[in-house]
Amino acid sequence: IIVPQKGKYYQALENAKNNIDINKKLKLTSYISKSKIVDQVKSFLLDILNLEINDFIMIDNSSESNQDIVSVIIYYKNFLPHYQNYRKYKINELIRKSDVEFINQGLTKYFSNNEEMPDLIIVDGGIQQINEAQKVLKNLKIEIPIIGLVKNQQHKTDYIIDNDKNKVQITNRDIYNFFSKIQIEVDAYAKSFHSKRKLDSSLEGFLTTIKGIGSKTEEKLLNHFKNYNNIYNASLEELSKVVSKNIAIKIIKKLGK
Image (cartoon, rainbow, N blue to C red; front, side, top):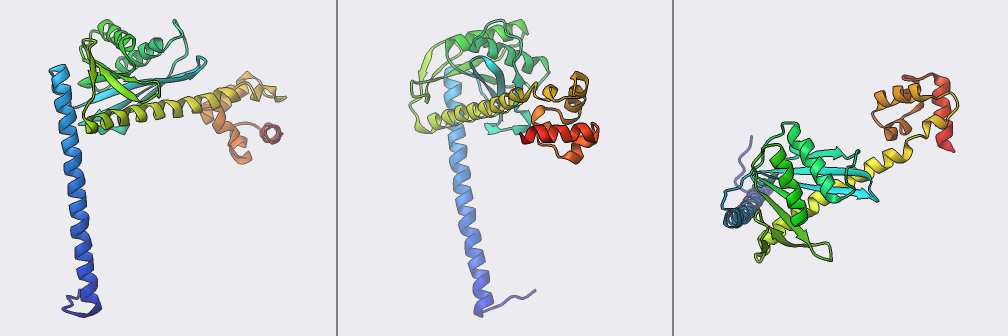
């Protein structure tokens, strides 16, 4: 260890110290700024709900012509994304082909699995979506306030519908940006999962067109690889561990065409 008093090594250490000081100030400023925004959002929610909120979930859905429907939930703990509590669900059996049905099934699946209880539920939508979410909670005997984030014609965050179905404008820019960010995040998460499901379903049925592969072989492959996409991305060696080499070669050749 050396402690230089002058020269290039002394200057290098001084530069490092200055960089640390600058970086520390920047991080502190960023932290203070974020803390202030969280305080503003908490105060805003306290005003409209008369309740202090720390943790919340937001639910959204994605589909295409009511096919490959998915419902997702993102979880914010102390107003920060808590990724291990993010959830995604496939919606298969439909009673009603509508967004409210997807919300119903998504929330029912979430709360039926004894997931961590939030202080607030946010739905992507307005009064209809809130009504449906409230119906789910009533059936499950759960009491959690619900608000809706409504988008305008440009598909951007516009205003909030509170737990009593009142329209609440977001006039504070920081609060608006906070809600807009989580609305964009849940939308992207839903669309990403929908795209993956759509890819998997588009590959379904392809295997059984190959001579020598029946439903049992297909099931065996799915049990091992979990989905069709993984099967079609598997190498000859990986496929041969599950089926005969002859069948594995047929799969590879068919995919080549």
